[in-house]
Image (tube, rainbow, N blue to C red):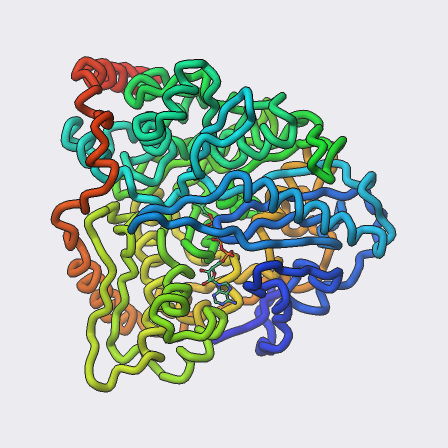
Length: 600
Ligand SMILES: Nc1ncnc2c1ncn2[C@@H]1O[C@H](COP(=O)(O)OP(=O)(O)O)[C@@H](O)[C@H]1O
Ligand SMILES: O=P(O)(O)OC[C@H](O)CO
C-alpha cells in the first residue's frame, strides 16, 4: 500500500508519474544534469523558494560507482547545478576491486568544472560558492608519495576481499573476530582500511620504499581528495571516515597506538583526525575550478545520508539503497557496542567542540550490485532500472530465494566463506522470478539488520527512512515494507547524502541549512512517500524463515581461500612477522581499555 505522506498526514494515492527525476538516474558514462534536475522527486517540489539566498554550497560526492559535484542554494536546499560521471572499477582477480586514484581526481575536477559552467544561467557565479563539502565512499584506501603526489597503487575498494587469509590468520591468533571491537566498534574484517594498508605495505615494493623514505601517506578517499585539492598542504580526515579504518579509538577519537602497532602502521603516514564541520582550509589546486574556495565539510557517505535524512534523534534509522545497503541507527552521544555483528561508528561531529554522535550500522555488501550482475553478467535484465518492470510481471518470486553473497556476507553474519546461491528453482522458474528474488534479497538483508538493531539497542524501530538511487524502484520499497512489517518513508530528496554533506559544510560557515530539524526546512511540500506493509505477521514469518534457510545454505561454501598473490608473495608475513608479544601487548591494552571504561 502506497501513500504520499505529508508531515503528520497520510494522504491520497501516490501517482507514479510524479516521481520524476529519471534523468538523474541515468547510468551513462557522463550523467548530464540540467537545472531541471533539482534534487526532489516531485515536480511540485522544484518550485524555487522566494527566500533570500545566503550563498551556495558545493558538494563533492565520491561514491563507489558515481562521482558528482552539485551546487546547492542556502538556506533552502535546491540543487541548481550538477555534473556526474561514472567511475571505473578494475577487478584483476575474483574478489579484488580497485579504482584509479588519478581518475578519481580527474573526475572530480571535471564534475566541478562542468557544474560551475551551469551557474550563470541561474544568475550565479563561482564566487557565490561559500563553502565546499566532501562526502565519499568509506574504507577504500589509497597510498601515495608525499613528494611526487603520485599514487603508489590503485585505491583498494571497501568490498575487496584480498586480505581474507590475513583476517583468518589474525582471528585464529586472537581467537576472536571481535578482539578489537571495544576499541574500534568493528570486527576484524577485510572491509576496513587497516587490513588494506597492511596489504599494500607487504605487497607493493614502491609502498615499502616510500615508507622507508618517510614519504608515504595513506588515507581514505576523502584524505586523497583533500591532499590534492590543497596541493599537499593538508593531510586530514574526518572522524566518520577515521572510525572505519579499524585504527581509530572510538573513545579518544585518535589513532590507537595498540592498533597501529598490531597492523605495523606508522602514525606519520596517516591523516590528522578532524571533526566533520569546520574551516579546514582553502582549495589551492590550479587543476580545480574550485580554487580559492573554502573546504569546510567532510563526511563518510553513509553517515552523511543519516544526517541528510534528519535521523538526529536516538533510535532514528535510515537505509541507503545503492550498490550496497547501509543501515544506520542514531544512538546519541554514547556508543552502543554490538554483540550481534553490527558496527559501532561515529555518526557525526558537527564542529571541533561539538559532541560526538554515534550510530550502530549494518552493512549489506551486495544490494543494487545484484541487479547490475543480472544485467551485465547474467544478461537477464537489459538495465538494472528495468528491475521493477520485470519483477512486477510475476506476482511472487515463485519460492525462489537469491542470497547474493558474492564476496561473503557482511552484517550480521560476517562470513567470508559464504557464496551466492539462487535456490528453489523449478521448471516453472522464469527470469522475472529471479529478478524479483534479487529485489527481495535486498529486503531480507535489511530485515536481518533491523532485527539485530532492535536486539542491540532496544529501540522500538517502527519506521524506516529510505534513500539512494535504488529507491526509485517502487516495488522494492513496497516489498521492503512487506518484509519488515513497518512503514518505509522514502525521502523526497533525491540525494540525502549530498544534503548531509552540504549541511556540514554550510554550518562551518555559519549558515544553517534547515537547522537539522525537518519542521524547519524551508520548503513546505511533501517530504516522504510512505509505503505501508500489506502482509500479515504469519506471512512475514514464513517467508523470512525461508530466507534464513537459504542463508544457512550459502554459508561455508568456500572451504579454502583461492590461492592468490597474497598467499604466494614471499615477503608477505603479516602474522608470522607479527611477534606474539604484540598480541600480548594488545590484549593487555584491551584489558586496560576495558578497565578504564568500567571505571568511568
Ligand atoms: N533506477 C534504478 N533502478 C534500480 N536500480 C538502480 C537504479 N539506478 C541505479 N540502480 C542500482 O544502484 C546501484 C548504483 O547506485 P549508485 O548510487 O550509483 O552506486 P554507488 O553507491 O555504488 O556509487 C547499481 O548497482 C544499480 O544496479
Ligand atoms: O558509494 P557507496 O554507496 O557504494 O558507499 C560505499 C560505502 O561507503 C562503503 O562503506
